[in-house]
Image 1 (tube, rainbow, N blue to C red):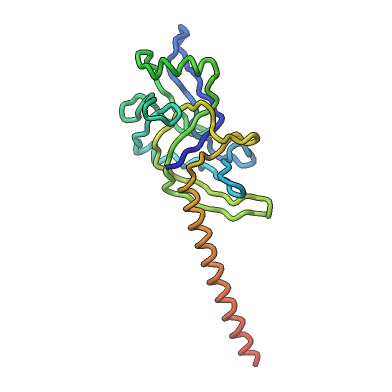
Image 2: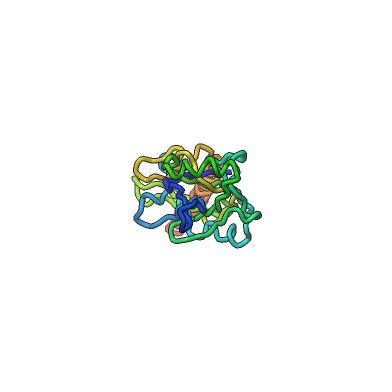
Length: 213
């Protein structure tokens, strides 16, 4: 399981009388070409982009994701199958909406923190089920992982976006082992392909020399 964090702070949606109605926020931000703030930094030289298709299957098939505070199962705010968290895709990314129940101690505890602006980010946990990698375009460009579809585990507000980048505002959590394994497999496959092509080219050159003789 992987986690991603962004500086998209949750807010409180209120009724006409001013009473809190729902916790809303964006757990994920889709990549927008030309906007560095929509690209996750994985590790030096490697970046990740969340495609706008990434959550289509999860939303259509209703992955039973939880709404958690700080990814902590003991801070359960809602659940898709119970109808206590609503997920939707918009132009920005994956939006969550958690109807507030002030009789729930977890809700009662987190609402004033959001209202005061104490919580500065949101996050989601997932497993990539469809992805692709892109070679760097130039020496200074990163290699790119594009996440095209995911299995979604949880979404919700966080105290602070872990490892946030000062410029982009998006950062992968330290649990990037699955991404690293995928990257290593891609690089190994690229190496095997390059070796195969080099072998073909060498044999072709030998044949060409033989013909000249």
